Amino acid sequence: MAIIEVSIDWVGRNYCAAPKDERLGCVATGQTLEEVKKNIVEALEFHFEGMALNGDRVPDEYRSGWEVEFSLTARAKLKYSDRYITLKALSDETGIKQQQLSHYVNGWKEPRIATQKRIIDGLRSIVANLSMVL
Image (cartoon, rainbow, N blue to C red; front, side, top):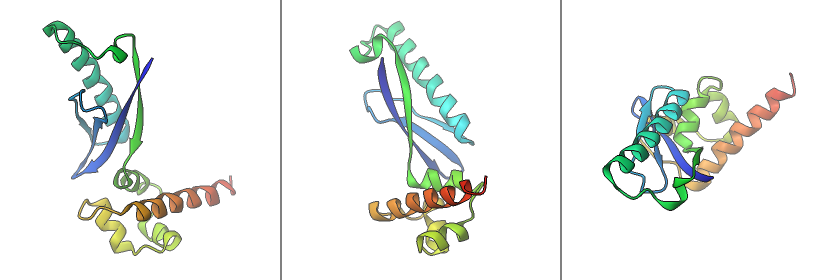
């Protein structure tokens, strides 16, 4: 079974998803992470059905079945986690200014790779600290 890697980002007021394999020209949006995941799977199913009906060749690796593997951009992770973790708490944990984190969440700036790692490490640290009290 083939794996379709799908990247999820936060753009404007929606999550946006697209396969990393550019041959699969599908995109989907959703207001929640769950919704965009469901929508991209449906878009891929529709895309493959349409290719078959039109006589287009479905890439060999996807003919015998596929499943989706999701990855979130730093912006999508920040947006999703803001339901549970304040930017202030993340700022305290990472040393990244709260205003800068806000710029990343809102799409005004894109964090560098090293900054993305600090954000993810900060989120993991907060989750690990919270798990100790459960």
